[in-house]
Amino acid sequence: MQLAVSRSSTQLGYILGMSDRISHWDRLHEQQRFRPVYPSEHVVRFLMASRSVFDGQSPPRFLDIGTGAGRHTKLAAELGFDAFGTDISFTGLHHARKRLHQSGFPARLAQASTLALPFRDRSFAVALSYGVFYYGTADEMKGAIAEMRRILVPGGRALVIVRTTDDYRFGKGKQLGHNTFQLEIAETNECGSIQHFLAANDVPVYFADFSGLTFERTDTTFANRTGVNSDWLITGGT
Ligand SMILES: C[S@@+](CC[C@H](N)C(=O)[O-])C[C@H]1O[C@@H](n2cnc3c(N)ncnc32)[C@H](O)[C@@H]1O
Image 1: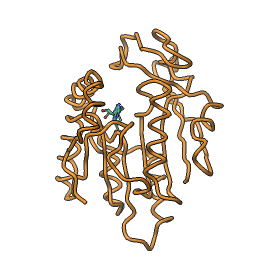
Image 2: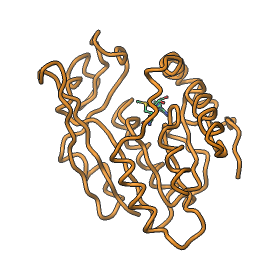
Image 3: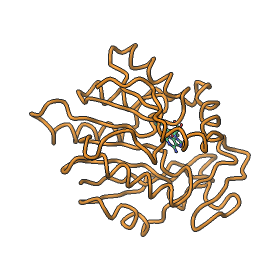
């Protein structure tokens, strides 16, 4: 199936409610520094391992939820997956499409919120969401995880990267709920965005519908080790 960048009428209602977030991300994706080229090593390892699980079948279907400029969708296509990507940002998808076409891969991309993926239940073998689900409230994160679970086949595999409560952004802004803040920090392009962070004991609760859950923390310090970017790498099966 080849998808153009498309919006269904039911998604459109939701997307219009998200218009500020869409323009925010459209503006960021206009700048080259927000369009990373190289994939994360964690995603490389996850896709290599997942590929061997599905060896012998027709190319496993892969969905990159919040693909941005498409670095991981392209990697999955290179590794032989039947790769699809979704994002709310039209500009991000424009660059993802260009990147895929330049590499000779079909651009199976759709503009969609994490809360309304335009795919049937149980239609992907592997799904990824790298640095996306924490934008929003706790309920939005839970909804996005449920959508990811919905589109995976039995025996499917998922990798999700979200922020830990030790990340330097945690607590810097107006608190809107448990572990949820509207950021008020000048040093990041994310000022004004709502973000939800997970503590270690939240992870098994949020991902309770996944089997064989594993998660580990990855921290990167900056500014002479005075700040830390802290993420959970979460893998689970269905
Ligand atoms: C930090 S970027 C990560 C992009 C990509 N996953 C990567 O690793 O290069 C976050 C992406 O999430 C998308 N995004 C944010 N909120 C979203 C939502 N509610 N639904 C779908 N995409 C969303 C943004 O447009 C942006 O492309």
